[in-house]
Length: 350
Image (cartoon, rainbow, N blue to C red):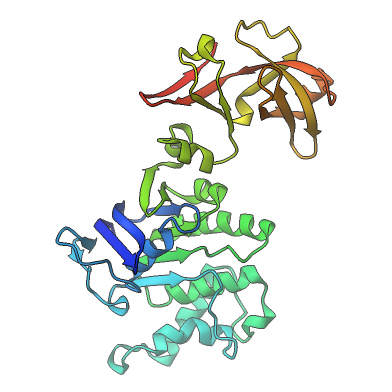
């Protein structure tokens, strides 16, 4: 089921939570709403779910697969909602938690007891937790409980799945495991999914399209590759991963001076002092080395301005360079982005 939202506004007293937001979620795709706290992403998700309603506006419409649901209550929209903190019933078994939505249907719509048992078994298999029917939530890990919450949301065969920071309460390793699992799971069942997160890596890894939000508006939307490689504003480039922000002294390389230059750490190339072979190489001093992990990080400062920045370098390259704290080196930026008042400049430097 596709989702089309047009000109959504939402205020809470004097606070503006959404400011003229329009959104499209293609049928069967996973779209991530990404942004800092207070950017409007959860408010937008709750409006899609029918848990909140947009402010009155003659242009406002919310359409699910051609049907206007702007004023339709949550229970009639055909959505499944998964919260950050599971919201499982602690006094119920896993089977009863999953079956809750089915047993709550009006009598004439309610499946038989046998059909409900079959659906519970089917969903436990789908989320790879077979055999846990008789356990209670307290007997499961956080990752298992979140998958049970997902199974419960899917029990009533929703047309749209809405996930509000579903992995936010889990530790880093479980989060990584679950997001890979969710990406594979969503592709297998093909349900239209909207996923709220403030974790940039999470959004870029699992989504078909990323919608970056800031100050109640959409700052940029596109594929993960598009928003990362072609950021529309300083906010987007700074929010989407680690980036160096430098000012001044780049006119020879960029054709502009006095503006702010952005470069990702993996686009910073280090060479022994004076040996870079580039006229526009910067002289820098090594402040600190972080060599744990698959690649090393080198903290540097420009000799001319004292500005700090960071390079990401393979451990093999670090070994070749024999870098030490306090050493002077030459630095070249392989790819830069420059936001000026006149234009956005993106350039690979030869």
